[in-house]
Amino acid sequence: MARTSISPNVLVRQQVGVSADAADLSWGASDSANGNAVPFNARLLVFARNDDVGAQTITIAAPADPFGRTGSIDTYSLDADEEACFGYFEPSGWKQADGTLWIDTSDNNVKLLVYQLP
Image (cartoon, rainbow, N blue to C red):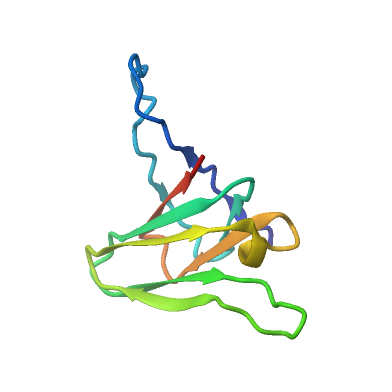
């Protein structure tokens, strides 16, 4: 199955005249069955929030280097109602062959918020 795409939020730089809703946070449910993919055009920050009543996990997969090593964040545990921030992720070292960052969770109650940094 194809991974579910998540569109990153673009960080609004502080300026005079920021339009309404331009700096709103956009949390989305993760897809624990298919995984998630975020287009990788710039550095990314990943926020995760566990809205479940029990602990859940998040994995952010790094592709293997030429020697088969990865630097993945593997099954990081989030307690109920806990939040975490990961990154920032650079394309080198984290961009998968399909041009995205892969994020997997153990439950759809893990909500994700991804920011693309300037």
